[in-house]
Length: 289
Ligand code: RP5
Image 1: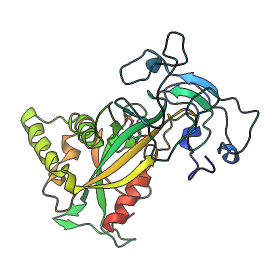
Image 2: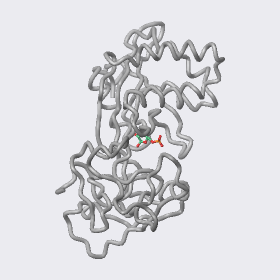
Image 3: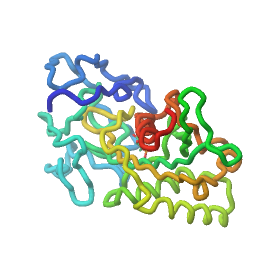
């Protein structure tokens, strides 16, 4: 597939998430599959939770008793989208899909359910930071500051966009709403009545004409392996006037600080490549970065 467009970094970090597993160290100049590397011996690792065969995971088609055909890659395989935003990915000598961004030091699926691309969706809900109704201007950049709804991930404790995996057969637009509901709204300690009101507010902002796609492609996710990786569609839902979702007072209503409005700034340390998506959002709205 030639030289990767970007060099993944988090996809080479050790230990592998939720484990003591160490990746085979891959220096920058050996990431690309186009560089021959006879010594390369990635560890074959699939987490127990994936081996247990939950409905969101593929079976291990290499095991006895499984259909010899395995998944159909680079196409819509029944209800599962196995196409990649990056293009047509290769299969290795064991018929395993090859990570289009190069080596990661681990083969098999790790914590990921699907062989090849694992499609996700990331809803970026934004508003302007305001004080007494006026937009707050950053003193260095001279630009207004955007805020986004951030969640603290339960698996690693890192702050992130409240995204999630696309269910089999689900439209990305539905995943965006579902994940936002599950990850941001459900963790609020608001009453059912209040949550229903919030849901209605979000329903309006999640309507298609207000959505702006900011990214569709490979995510440098720490769970990626040589044969399984995350790809996402990141979509911005912006409340320009602050009278819709922007009213949501997450600071006071949240559950132990697991969801909050966070100022967007380049210093933010976020999960995977989420700050890269936010940078694009600031460019789109002429906001501070
Ligand atoms: C990231 O993992 C994506 O950008 C998305 O935010 C998330 C999906 O995985 P789960 O949150 O479902 O674990 O790479």
